[in-house]
Structure formats: structure tokens, C-alpha cells
Image (cartoon, rainbow, N blue to C red; front, top):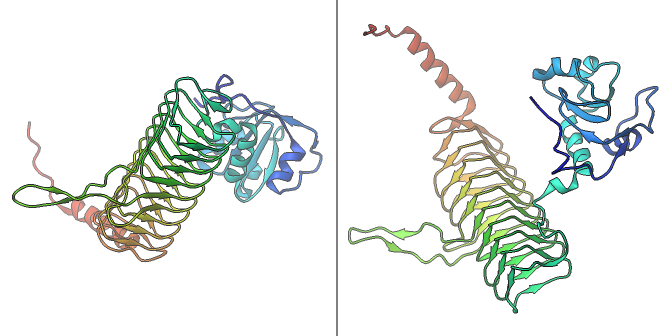
Length: 354
């Protein structure tokens, strides 16, 4: 059963009045609502109480909405009539996005990996090379290692056990999680790297031959632009002959593999389990569903979307939606699936055997 945020780990940092919430999400208060009403938490519809904020934008949760005890619900227009009379409804087009903004104000510590040290400075047990350059306001947790000539911007947190190699650059207001390794990497501002990610190691490059496989030196870098988020245990290889690039605002889930020379555009979304082979380019706003595999040296056009578990083995035009193995336009994929299902229904059933 859904539960509220654990008050030990994520106690609300503040309370919010109904009037402040309405102003923040850009809607007017319903008639009779008291703008001074205070809310101190956020919770799912099923477990929310009178002091909590909830949201609703999915028909599956219609019954939960009808029975909610939440004091406030951010709700899309088509479900507004199902909000109980005891709950204030703020009706808006994208309640989930509005809820995310309110939740960030209530729980700012949940927005990025937190420092275990808890204050500005270098914790006992961290090792910062004397030639590293740290701006004021950097936090370095126990066990972290910062190499020579590394540079770290103000407001950045380096988590416990993280390793930043020589000459690595990390911008301002970043969060580098526990156990992360960054080598041969330049990181912009406001970047979040979750625990265990590995960035900048060798790409998988070998000159194959019957006498053995000759290692090809990987002499590029990884460039991570501003406002990128990289999930736990994701790996991003440095370039071989050109840089591996992660574009501004791109969000990468856990357990993703990005190979050498890959260029990912701005504001892409890459879901867990994706593997992108070397020298492939994703243009801006591409979405790859979970467990998508992309072969090397392809181009996926701007705004294209690939359905989960698909295999992409040729270029994808901009703005298209593809799926399947091998991936193809979704209408062709759906026709293929429907045809196969009909053929299977017509096929004679095999005699059952004991």
C-alpha cells in the first residue's frame, strides 16, 4: 500500500499555504477556499490526509480519487468532478508537473544526492590533491579522492568514495554521488550523477585479427553539459577519436551503457537498460524506452521516440515513433503483430501429449 514520505529521511523543509500553492502552479483558487490553509506534506491519494497534497491525472486511480482524504488535490479537468467535497481541487492541464514543483519546495533535500558530511569543506578521510582547485562552498565527503589539477565549482557535493581523476572539471551546484568515478571528463553546471556511475573509462575498441585483437587507444573525452542527470550504475565511455557528448538537460536512467563517440543531443530521455553502441548520434529530444538497443554509427532524428525493448539497426527519421525488433514505424510494427496473432489463431493446435 502506498505510504507517505518517511519523516526520518525526508522531513518537509517548509509548509505551504493554499494561496502560495495556487500562485506557484498558476491557477485561481476555487470559490470559498481559504488561501491561508496550510499544507505540510505530500502523499498518494490513498494515504493522504487533510494536511497533505496529492495529484491525479490517470484514470486507473479514479476510485482512489473519489475516496481520498487529501486536503488538496492537483487534478486534470477530466477528473475534477470526482474530487470529494472535503478536498480542495486545483484544476490544471498538467497536474503531475505542478505536483513535482510543489514537492521540490517541500523536500529540497530529495532533489539530489546529499552530502553525508553535512557542511561545506573537506571531510576527514577525503583525499584532495594539493594541485586540485576547489571553489568556495564545495563539499567533499569521507573516502572521496580528487586528483591533481581537477577543478570543482562552488556548491558542488562530492559523495563518499567518489573518485575524480586528474584534470577532471566539474561545474557549480553539481551532485556527484557515492562511489562515482569520473576520469577524462568535463562536467557542466547543475549536473547530478547518481551513485556508482562510471564515466570516462576506455571505450571498447579493438582492431580484430586472426593473430589477436589489438587494443585501440581511446584518446577522447566525455563532455557532460549543464542540467544533465545520470542514473546509478550507468556507464559512459570516453571517445576514441572524438568526444562522447551528453547534451544539455538530458536525463539518463540507471543501468544504461553509452559507448565511445556517442553524441546525445539536448533534453533527451534514456530509460533504464538501454545500450547505445559506438559513434551513434541522438539528436535533440529523442526518447529511448527501457531496454532499447541501438547499433553503432546510426542517427536517430530529433524528437524521435523508440518503444521499450526495441532494437534499432538503421537510421530513424526525425519526429517518428518506432518499435519492435528490428525497429520500424509503429504502425508497421502493430500491423506485423496483428498479422502474426491472426496466423497463430488459424494454425492447427498440436496434439497435446501426456
